[in-house]
Length: 310
Image 1 (cartoon, rainbow, N blue to C red):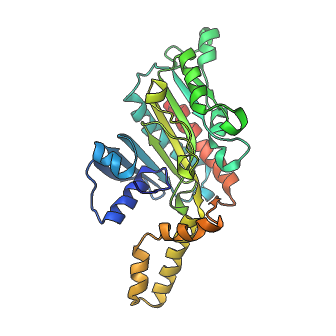
Image 2 (image 1 turned 60 degrees about the vertical axis):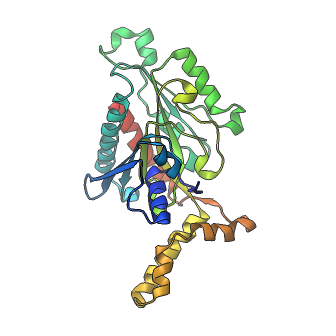
Image 3 (image 1 turned 30 degrees about the vertical axis):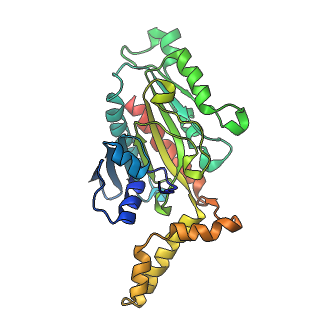
């Protein structure tokens, strides 16, 4: 299997297609939709074992929402992005649970590490209803769905695997579905905190940065798991590869007939760059200097999407 070093199904598909010079991959269906000039939605469906083996993701639906110019997004643009996420989330949740099924929202990550704090920040903004329905039902509109939320922390501070914590919660409060929010790794600088991936196949925390933890999925919890992930970091090798592409483009504009540069730009140089960086421990995990603002914007988008969908 390829060392994709990305959690995004759409990126894995693109990498596999490019490496094998394929137009399509057996077992993978994909469609794209432009919502407006700043928001695009791509839907990837893995339908069989060939698709699973090709990109290393289980069969299921993967929806990628790309939000351009997030750094300078205004309030109405963030609201629009949240609305798009809500619509996609409604659709994917409706496949697994009815409109009254209780939902547990889980924010993965470390609240003290900004690029990893998205999950805990989102859980703080979730409109929880379980306690009100249980103890003050007279104040709740009939038909309100039970929603609860938790940020279980990370293994380094709790000493407990997140999957173990969630298994105990699920066995006690019996939700019908779990929504997990986590920070992801990407193979593109442009996607950092500007892409949302939805999937109904669960999640393996830390997989994108080489710190794989126990899987959180229907197989481990016994109920459907919908994952919402947003890339917040890339490897140095990715950064160098993207910068190399930009550099080559600049040179091509000055010397368009250079065949060597054309060939170099068409190739994925990630593995070669990584091989040069790893022996010196230079293949760092990096994040942009504006990550604080980006996390705040994406927290609003994700929290709005979940609250409206529920």
